[in-house]
Image (cartoon, rainbow, N blue to C red; front, side):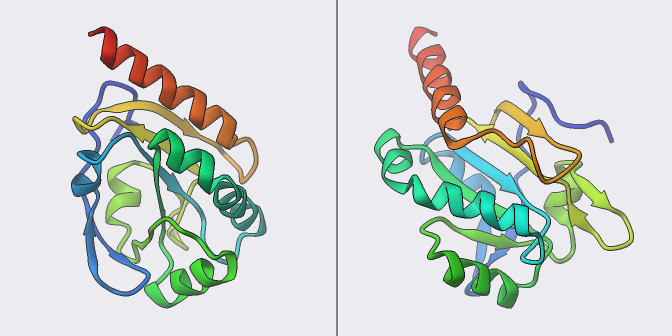
Amino acid sequence: MPKLKPGDLAPDVTLLSSEGSETSLGDLWGRGITAVLFYRGDFCPACNRYLHSVQEREDDLRETGLQIVAVSADRPEAERQTVERHALWFPVLSDPTREAINAYDVVYNEHEGHAEPAVFLVSPDGVIRYEAITSGPLGRPSVDDLLRIAQGIRREAAAA
């Protein structure tokens, strides 16, 4: 399957929250622009730093209405540890069967099943408006980048 790109419909996958309840990605789209952050897992120091950097900008993200959801192949218990360690305000979803990881074509390690670090910005209509997939844990868009891109998506929607 080719990698998803801007203009494609975002796959609507149901995953487990860190508390173990089911969460549909598609249910999130209607609430505003959503940044879907794929990360390797709790074991990855660079991924943890990235999640923490997003957490530190909670006020800016909430103010602009950009919602965040993070996804890894970790089980809900590991996701819960990640949420608690970083006091994350956004949902962190568990994808141990790699349904979302495969649907978004961000498989990093076939044997281990980890996600490749990636960011997808999805508009309220469920369309991918931006994607960044990195081959390593570094080089992801900063929170400032995400905020600027979300503002551009809003301007485009208002002009249409």
